Image (tube, rainbow, N blue to C red; front, side, top):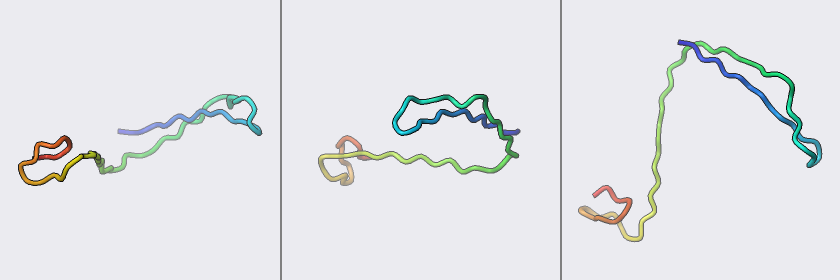
Length: 59
């Protein structure tokens, strides 16, 4: 399995209009191992004590 990333872009001079860069650039990469992590944040109005049913507490 391979990954190809294609870049395209715009630039701006001193707050003027955005100007597209002509063309694209593609970069190929060899297969690599990646660890995928996900974090979830919950704001609660009370402590998450054992057995709590407050939103965001896991119980």
